[in-house]
Image (cartoon, rainbow, N blue to C red):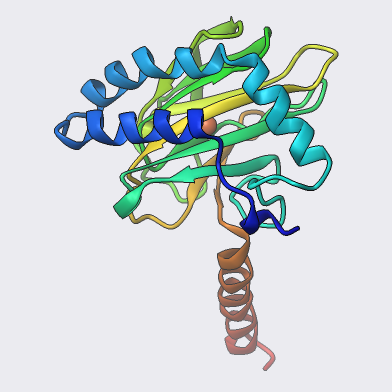
Length: 225
Ligand SMILES: [Fe+2]
């Protein structure tokens, strides 16, 4: 049976339909976050639901499609609402695994299905005028337990690093609002003050082909050629 033949569990579908209804009239990201921070904890506490879902996924009988390309390699798309109003995504964190610090194209609410999800928020200090350069300061660091949530915002208002400092594999469920049409997010290297684009797999090769062409043309135009 292929993933597409499986259907999303009724409880998750009802949750998503409720979110679609609640978000429809809201424009301000902070209002959207407030609404979802009331709803998402209810889903995060449905441990039995997710045990069943993971059992199906482990057996290869889930609506979750591990082959679907995503921005991050630990990401599974759970639900995408009509008109891409929001999406619900599952992230799988092995022991000691963390994201690189990154920004977002949308507001988001995130929380774990078990205890110990680590969140570090950053502020961007530079004026973004130097290409490839970004200076971040850590603003806060905290750990979330099952049912607790935090939020993020688009672009430099929502730079964070999340991950799993525990010795067991952990899942977070993240709900993101409608994306800005940027096509990439920024990743940050704290040690070197480097900022770099993180692209979806399909766009990454196109971007690198274009960038490599720029390099080759520059070399061809240089002295000695
Ligand atoms: Fe994030």
